[in-house]
Length: 151
Image (cartoon, rainbow, N blue to C red; front, side):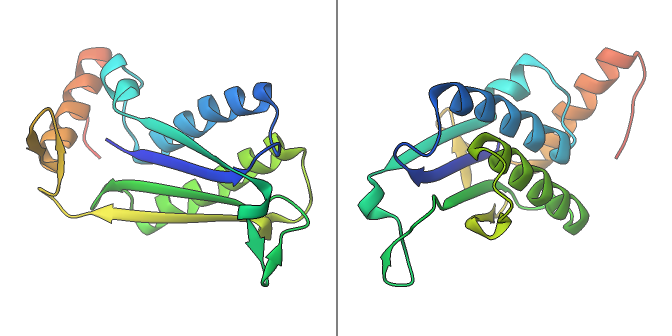
C-alpha cells in the first residue's frame, strides 16, 4: 500500500511527461516492493502530484533557477530492504530526469522514503498489517504461477 508524492514547480513537466511519469513511478515502486502486478496491488499503489507555483520552490534562499523535484515514498515498515531502497531511488531519479528532459544534474531530484510502522496504516476503516499484505502478494504469485513462492 505505497504512496508516492511528487512535488515540483508548475510548468516543469508537460502533461504527456506527467502521465508517463505516473505510470513509470508506479511500476518502479511495485518492482522494488516485489509485489505482483495485479489489479489489487496496482489499485493500492497511489501517486499524487503536487504542482507548486514556481515562486514556491526555492533553493539557497531564492527561487530555484531550474526545477527541483521531491519524491516522497511512504511504504509499510519492512517493505523495502536497503538494497531495494537504493534501487528504487536510482530508478525513480532516472524516471524523473527523463520526464524533465534528461538534465544531467541528478541533484535537483531528492527521494525520501518514509516507513510507516506496522499497524499505523489504515484503509477501509481498519489497520493494515504488513504480514497480511505479504501473504496477499505470495498468494497472488502462487495463483499466477500455480505454485507458492517466497521472498
